Length: 462
Image 1 (cartoon, rainbow, N blue to C red):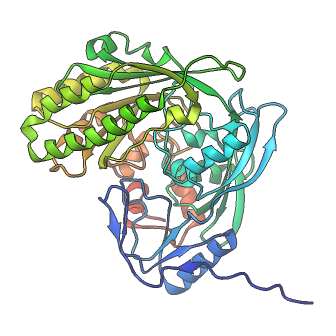
Image 2 (image 1 turned 120 degrees about the vertical axis):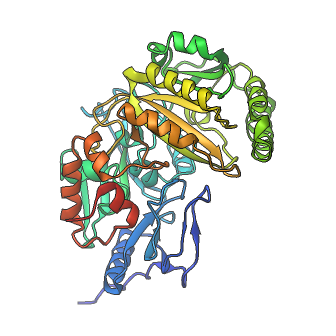
Image 3 (image 1 turned 90 degrees about the vertical axis):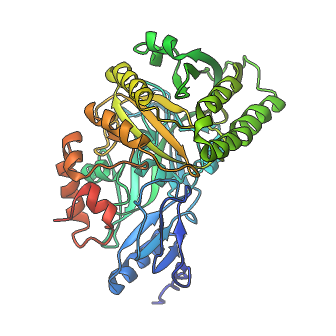
């Protein structure tokens, strides 16, 4: 009997080099970087690392602000594992999916959301919901709990119905809500702590268009209807410019597949608003504010008044996704949706009292509950409040002030964004945290996938 030829080994970087995340606030020098293209190659990477006595961390596009991927061992870059692995058209939506679900698509882990959106559109399909950037890999987005806005929609992990992952022992397994359900619920938003995710099964919907309305409002007007605001459209979000009473609000309504009404945004308007104002001018404002902080309140007035009302209709991903080229650091917390008014009033009051200045607006979104054990939306509908700081600005206590408020309201930090919490606090915030730790100890008893950040947020193994 002839032995099959062994496929080529995964390519490696050839030696230590510095890895830096998108924002530039996290870096490390791994012993090597591996670029597997198949699950078999992922197994080899893990086996070799174990033999060498090195730990392993997976990484996607590096858009997280935390040290989740940081390692001096082996960094596994999954972006070569891109594309679709199969599609199942459904006669009826599964019980655990949105009513609009019409297909389940297996997607390789390193596929960026940008590429996935294009692939789905070619098939007449779409993601049910998206965040506002598309540079992340699908596995990275799901594993850190990336979300968009929409009170009846979950984050991206909520649309994932199956996982294929290579466990630390090298075995390739498949799990779902029905099969190996504990592993699935732990690893779905799992920070790469339970195995290397190599493919995800995503529940998708028919391609759809959105009627988008964007308009300035006053902060007072938003507060007057904060309890009903999430229901004013399918997808609602707003941006408040600290030090002003100005809010830029977005109300996006999904259109039925047969509805061809509406007018697209003229190309010149998209270039003016999204490129010239939101990136070019805004970048200049941030650079000026970093050099001359006393000008920030006036600069915020300029930013707030520069965004005028607009109404248009376009494909879902075109509306959801924004171009974000001005680099920043970010913290974001999920808080019970019922507390939205109280939390936001406390934020406005405290920032005003302390005269904290920042050139980035505060971003407020809403999302539904899901069942992933480490999801910020686990069994809870949330308001999400995100704060950004320009990477070139001097560090101040802005994030610390906000996190003090969020902690008082049972805030759960976004797993891909800056926070100060540890395993002891997460045990109080997540009802299934003990199960998370148990499953982690079962699948990775030797800590092959550990790093200091995971030890901090999930606790030591064992």
